[in-house]
Image 1 (spheres, rainbow, N blue to C red):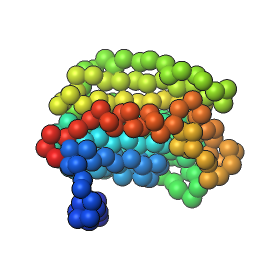
Image 2: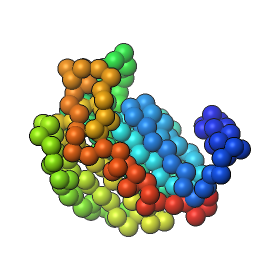
Image 3: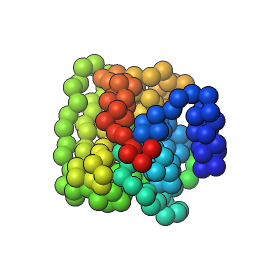
Length: 195
């Protein structure tokens, strides 16, 4: 977290940063870091997005955000590296028990005092890529934030509509129905009044 603090301070020293719109986004371990930022730096960040990674920090430490913070997790059900369900997954040289997507987001919903009955909706299935996606959204969360799980049914360990670094056999299918615009749509609805 000291690195995150130093990075924000450095960027703010040479750019005009809107402190009400600071976000963290990451893939895999970067997703886990984004979740940790939500746990420990909610006063500085408006929202976070984790792709193919969950709130691993909460499995070994207290995750106590000081304010409501928006959380979106995008996760494939066929991710071989950070499995959708809690498991001991081994992929690309990593190992160890990893918190599943549903457990990660229900944890956020509880932590942020969201309504216990989330709504689920389908995203348009625009491309025949072997995947389809649903969004589970918890409403009524603290400070008006949103907690969402975007489940890519059949999706792998890859940024949506991205270019995989490894073949499909190692990381799974790429969702082509949406891409980074979904990430920005989520982030842009969140501001931090304490910023």
